[in-house]
Amino acid sequence: MNNSKHIDTKTIHAGKVKDKQFGALSTPIYQTSTFTFENVQQGSQRFMGEEEGFIYGRLGNPTVRELEQRMAALELTEDAAAFGSGMGAVSATLLANLQQGDHIVASSALYGCSFALLNHKFPQFGIEVSFVDMTDESAIKSAIKPNTKVIYFETPINPNLVVVDMQMVANIAKQNQLISIVDNTFMSPVLQNPAEFGIDLIIHSATKYLNGHGDVIAGVTCGSKEQIENIKLTTLKDMGAVMSPNDAWLIIRGLKTLSVRVERHCSNALKVAEFLNTHPRIKQVNYPGLPSHQGYPLIGKQMRAGGGIMAFEIEGTFDDAVEFMNSLEMCAIAVSLGDAESLIQHPASMTHSPYEPEERAAAGISETLVRLSVGLEYIDDIIQDLSQALEKMENRLKQVS
Ligand code: LCS
Image (cartoon, rainbow, N blue to C red):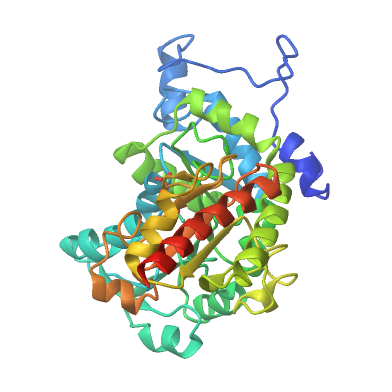
């Protein structure tokens, strides 16, 4: 399909494979672990890469392949690889580009398990990591060493919603012949296309907005044909975090409504952020769609809207924040994000517990920070739920004082 179509059209059509046999509108699920060859010669040719075609489910599957093509079209890259989880994508993408003795410059604030992989696991294999504030151009530049291979970051960052200037990072990477890798989970390709700024590899936890219905764990990496082939033939094939055809089908279905869902997530989130921002019991709201946010100037330039996620600080103690969350009646206390349901969690004790307290402090993740993934419910109902929980907290405080 012509790549010039609007993103709303592309989420439905781009990368779709026509079913020549029956004309099925919905993508068939090829629930098979292996593929038969006409004869030994054909099997051998497929293994040698001399003939196109599928071989074995871990090396590729037609349903999964369609999702990969759809994601490449949405992220404006040549190709994509699908994985059994977002962390499968993060680990395979990084390891395909690194070896013992290499060095990474990474954001000091990252999703907790990405941080754990870089901070705890990679050093055991002789891969060195420097964590920096990715909004600080000179800090990134001075962290680069002769053995640096990769710059790794998220924008907006999970969980504090700090926005990183992708053009700035891509320029540094190019000047130093480094591979730039961004995790685009929070924005989805509807709100931001890192390839437009020259970022080399784009990772998604497809568990989140891409699927959007809270029923799949999956990941995707988008990039050049050469990069994706390297990942597929090394860390995907030999470490094996592959996506199942059923999950690929669910994500393809989810993608068809991605634009409409993201639009509603964004409009709901902006109203929630405005409500919280003026509430006396809320100290600070980190939401890129608010003019006071550090990332707001990049809206329109880098990202098309503020997204569906925010983090905020309760005016009070850690116990007050816990009481507020426990008083919610509709918003679910759960990790994950990007689902139809509004989900709320406490990063310090949940998603970002792999950080030591001092590492969290250095990464700007306070102990009282609350993260909210605003869902698709009717906006007044979401605000009413937050409002009644804040009111309960306030009433108890009045009784105590
Ligand atoms: N990257 C980001 C930015 C994420 O938020 C997550 C998961 C991952 C990668 C890993 O993806 P997964 O393997 O779970 O598909 N983030 C989660 C979170 O914030 N709460 O629960 C999971």
